[in-house]
Length: 152
Image (cartoon, rainbow, N blue to C red; front, side, top):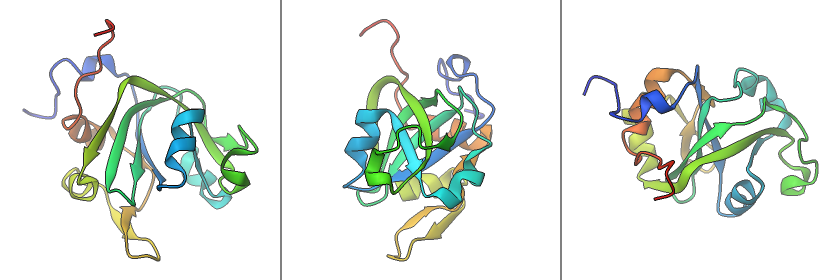
């Protein structure tokens, strides 16, 4: 294929995509609250995300890419002030598109999709920046099943 995902791309109207991080301790809260968060200094990196942009959650401890999500708010401080014990106040509200999907070997897939990576202090590789263009998201969507809107 030449960058199109049969039946998927027309469902998604987005300008950008985003990938935010979680670990074993924060994943459940992200999913329960439909909220992604980061440290306050990262808010400036998140301001390019618009309502409707497609997003993923990367559990860097499990090397799993979780999705598919859509931003339902712009990034702002403290959408839910008490989330993650106030450690991640730069927040974006998200909604799950279809059923939750998990893709293993996320680091390999992100590299293959052209996402620039950087090491955390622990040495684990994560995306250098959270916001990406349509070219990256179209490659990532190839790894996910088409969301079902008819309740199947």
